[in-house]
Image 1 (spheres, rainbow, N blue to C red):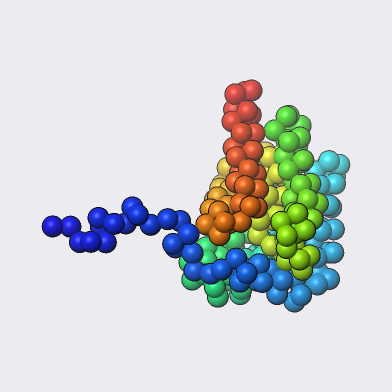
Image 2 (image 1 turned 180 degrees about the horizontal axis):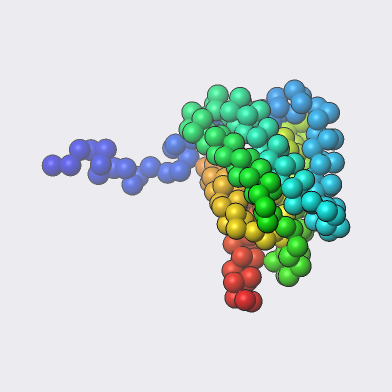
Length: 226
């Protein structure tokens, strides 16, 4: 005879596994923003510099882009995921190291001979730059649209969602053997974030999921065009 929990597991909903309330979740971003302001200005400037480097492609642009993204992933993984998010969701303690791994892979890809080059100018590459700009510019403007205070804004280089979205957009314009690996962790994060927001009943849940779906579509379009 099966134990009761085995016969009833399918009755659980996604929100039944949520370990925190929406208020606690958004308060986490308010706390991070208060602690790190005005670092936001520097991270946003870094993001805009990355976009300009992709467009202008000066000498060793791949190295500089990779190193800046690596530093930001490492910072977000430590300052928000490990130091704050893991305090309200124990599972994030196992996810935060993935951002450190992403930082390491970016540094290796940028430093390796014949490593990353942001030289793609196909439709997917152009779409990627639009996605990157959306992560940089649109995400910080979302709180009033969803009835939240400005203090809870998610900013590139401070919060994981816009950091992952902008990085994925930039990587769509990249070529190099490590690019498929570099796409995996940010994509998985967006799926996790979207499901978490959906479990909270937050209307913003569709944004990270839409970003992930758009990246998948762009990659599929690139394969078809070959």
